[in-house]
Image 1 (cartoon, helix red, strand yellow):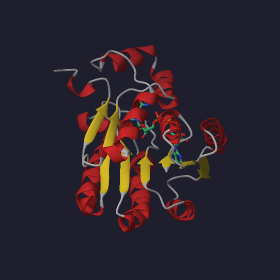
Image 2 (cartoon, protein in one colour):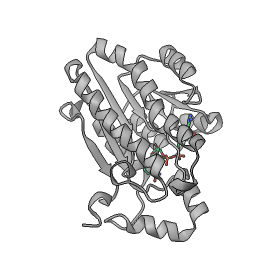
Image 3 (cartoon, helix red, strand yellow):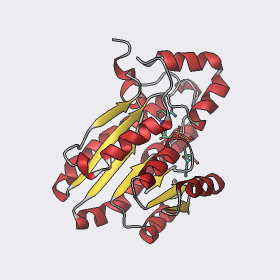
Length: 238
Ligand SMILES: NC(=O)c1ccc[n+]([C@@H]2O[C@H](COP(=O)([O-])OP(=O)(O)OC[C@H]3O[C@@H](n4cnc5c(N)ncnc54)[C@H](O)[C@@H]3O)[C@@H](O)[C@H]2O)c1
């Protein structure tokens, strides 16, 4: 299962996993885009339309469409505002999708993975989660929480043959990023490119390739890790 699989990084992950032969269920609230993505990926992809912050409905849909060997928590939203300009409502909205939806998914998929003694949890964080973010304090806090949550799930579930890892994209050319650039101007695009060692935006397919590896049987000895797919963002200031 892939959350937020209708567009951007999620859509590239759905496409790549489907190409690898996985039967994918794409969870997204945007039905039109979700169905269009599923159609381009072929018959192996099904769609579950859900707002991932509706945890009761999400749990029911996972029970109906699962069990799953692989769960990719990818859905997320960003907000560009200095912390003093954010409200409690903003914090709740950002935490609900960027962090708590991953709790709800993980809770729902783990029992079957434990029973089958195999599982792959892949959480899409952000470099903001380990570096912090000017204009994204709440988003960064949620993503930092996701990294710690992933490691804890790895610790608790190694004995069941289940791995849990985080992948941290840098600036990836997706609708989410283009929205931010539209609001912040072309200057923001240059700032993002220059924050990477490779001086360019990443492609969603480059994140999907990392997910495909981490989710594969070949990656069975990789757990509790935090992998940047971010053009060297973590060391670009060094
Ligand atoms: N694009 C980047 O530069 C970048 C950088 C770092 C991390 N990320 C992370 O990668 C992930 C994917 O980002 P993207 O750029 O592909 O975004 P995107 O906006 O292109 O796609 C996100 C998808 O999630 C879905 N979604 C959002 N909230 C939802 C909800 N409440 N219920 C159901 N579906 C919901 C949207 O409908 C959309 O299909 C996010 O977690 C994001 O934080 C992205």
